[in-house]
Image 1 (cartoon, rainbow, N blue to C red):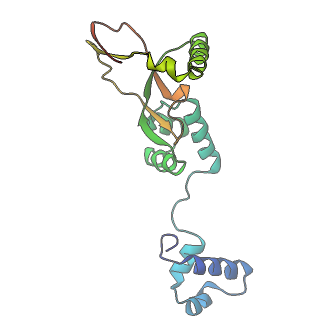
Image 2 (cartoon, rainbow, N blue to C red):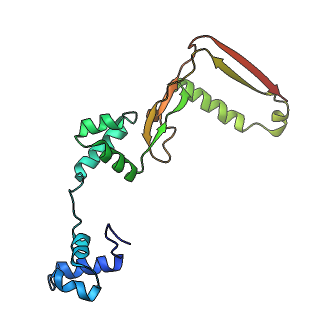
Image 3 (cartoon, rainbow, N blue to C red):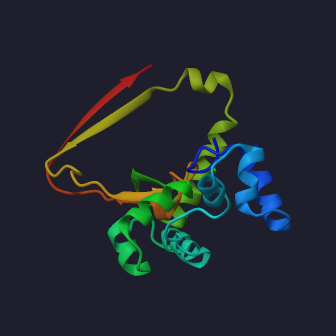
Length: 182
């Protein structure tokens, strides 16, 4: 079914082609295609208030890309549209509201050092890895990260810097647990 009024795609195309050519009036179309006058009118020009303009939708997209942690209420106030419109069009643009992933706050220098070390380790022979002890640690802190930051993001944007919530060390009393396997 096509559109709001159960009109098939085939008939919708036929309605538009015939109506735009102005060879037939809507009332003359009803019998050959076996649809009511209202279905044909609504298929050609849907009823109701028109949605937001393309410009408004582009502004919405730009605002989300600029500050993905903004809320729907803030977007609605900024763009002068309703919150329902924001929800509807963010879903159509394939934005999902998700909890921001947490990742340590790293400097560019630190990121480059880690990348060099990882590339060096990737080239190590198998005998080297047989001698390695794998360990892990976990921290339980007094002040847990109880609050959640929500962000708008598309499918493959989970680890983009502006869609992450940075974490820092030393946020109160904590207990470390350490373990190793070899």
